[in-house]
Length: 365
Image (cartoon, rainbow, N blue to C red; front, side, top):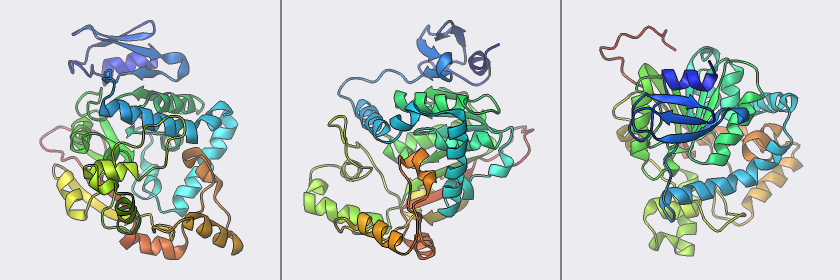
């Protein structure tokens, strides 16, 4: 039995009719209930197109266009030259970078305990985080609404030894997975870019096993990036007066398109109270703020100035950034890490799905 067929028989479901009746027929997954057909490509890492087709000129098509553009900017060049040896080196370097940054991927994610666990990553980008989890023995399932990103992640996962892992083109608002099937759902800075973030969080809750944990990062409203960078630029450019908040924040974050004209459609930011409200169905275990740099201010060329000053004082950019940022990353200083607890742009949350009355046999993480 192929890995994809095994997935179809254990945890995949049709995103259209929600029935868990998918069969692998040559290079397609076919729903035996509603007869919907989804393309699959086992030869490229089992990437299967399980996202319902989006309408032209729709918000979700804009999401796919923008994040496809950013894929080409950040990951395509690396993907074109990747080998297993190089990937393993890059994953090790990436882990070192995440450790230096006090990042969600190593601080909140229980890497030492993920072996044998089924871990879903929503929005894997180029697959760096998913590869890290596979390195530690997780059975990784990755889902991204952008086909290029799902294929990129699938390709990387197949270059690594370890548990069979799959990547799917799927919509976080309508995940093609059965209820109660994942031990951990991980998502780093993704759900706040969706059309309906609350619906994504509901889906996270649905697919988690009772007792399972959501490990998620969303952007912080009360941060230096928001009040001292994004808001001033929104006022200067007038974007704040032309669009609803998630759209004007989106247009001013994540960079600029280089392969098209579509800008980032949505970005949401959250206060602590809004985070607690968004995860009200969960038992919140921890909520930590991080990610501040001295370039988080509305001053032209400040990022370049920070980089040059750090080089002048002997600090080198970390090569671990290439896998996920497309280039080496200048890590935070100890002062920046400290200020990140109060002024950081990242809310890192660990939220547990109540066991309720379910008979759960999996050991607690």
